[in-house]
Image (tube, rainbow, N blue to C red):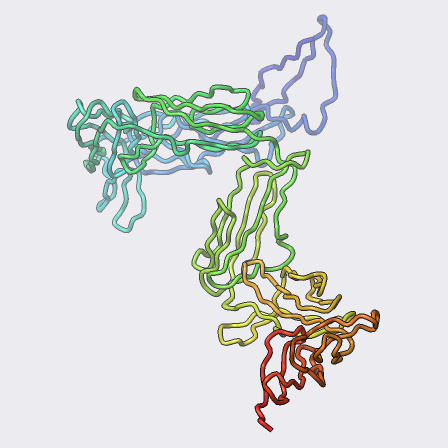
Amino acid sequence: MTLTQTEPVRPPCGRPARAVLRLVAGGALLSASVSPLAAQSIAEVQVTPETMTLGVNQRQNIFAAAYDRQGNLVPSAPFTFWSSDTLIARVLRDGTVVGVGPGLAKVEARVRSRRASLAVLITGGDSVLVPPGSVLTLDPTAVVLLPGERASVAAHAVLEDGSPVAPGRITWKTLQPDVAVVDSHGVVTGVGPGRSIVQATSAGGLTAASPVAVEPAEFALSRARLSIGPEGAETLRALVPSQGNRPVRSGIQWHSSDTSVAWVGSGGIVTGRAPGQATVTAAGFGQERSAAVTVHRAPEAFVVSPPAAAGPIQLPVQGTREVSAIAEAADSTPIPDARLDWTVGDSSIIGFDAATRTLRGKAVGSTTLAVRLGGFDPVVWTVDVIPGLLALDSSRLGLGVGARATVAARLVDEAGKVLGPASGLEWSSDRPEIARVSGAGTIDGLSPGRAVITAKAPWGRTATAEVLVTGELMVSSNRSGAFGIYQLRAAAGDTLIPILVDSASNLQAALSPDRTRIAFSSNRTGSYDLFVMDADGRNLRRLTSDPG
């Protein structure tokens, strides 16, 4: 079965006749209905005018129209325009033709696979001048090349006010062809070591020059190792360290040792194809440089801590805090080679070490830390750097067995002024069998004794509180010979727990209202005086000294 199309026939009115589709099968002519979408397929393109004559720097629009097979105008057809010689005529995106230099060029209007052309004649010889006051400049202003390397130099004409103007046809030459040569399009090629000048001259007599240095040197790759995922891409660049790390413009051939793992294009763009290892090699100018490429498993999850939705990360000036971000595969195992891109919003407020994932506060303020993994939305934390230290609202408290109390953590400045509540703390007890603490700072007294409760902030600061847990009753007893001080628990009334037992007589023990100290009378100095000690018998102090 063969599908053929007749050539369109232009009717006298200038509008193309309908295209006729013949479906030929065994010599029979078949007819078929055409859908509205097929009816709008472009069958012919026309341009007006068919010829154009312009002077240098003159402009004129061309009109392009597209028609479907029924001869209907196709509105908003996506035209592109092309010139056979941009040194004679160039075409802007809107179809405006600009005269550049004397000569004849062909201009085409293209849409999909259809095109139409017109002949453009640009008149005026070498006597045609750009406007008075124009200046010719070259870009780049200086060229450094390896022997055999190529670079393009462009000529631009500008008026005194900086507005561009077409320079017309440019003639190129170099002063030392044994060092560098230049073609008619401004492409400079390094020939041998040395220095030269590339010079451009416009048809109107404007000139400009750029120095060219050709220096043999070694090149290096921008990265020695790459880690990408399947379908991920990274760009390797050939750089010349001895020439300011400039990129090598041409002459580099790229090769991958295993194209089933990683493919590399002519511009050094490395694309991952499947998990594995490969080596990408850049060769040119008698040199070879290689980079190791790892294509890791495809990430299926991106796990970060703390969650960004949990609220701002707080840390004080000079304080540190770690964050984590892990790419995980489908089996929930980490992918250590997955590339993570970290960005700090304001580096004057925080610093970030990507190797250790550690934040450090630099100055009071608020900023952001962001991490990106290809294929996932970026995670952005708000980071508040505060001037505060960590403190508890009570550094010492007493509890009876079975009693409960809560301590609150606060942020304070160096003068002790409260700045606000502290959150995200880790609570612990050094003697959990005596006093237990919850994640909210609630303490339960479990048995008589002393414990230290610690609150630790995410950035490393700590604050502590001493907890003294006591029984229900303090008594004096001479069961050891002299009177000692004991505590008694209601749950074990026949068991005395010694607090202070020595050779002196220690009498009339009384527990302080906050249950942290015991006052008592003792003759340990010869006569009876008042003494005080912690509720567990430590830190004994004499309060009175009366020889009577």
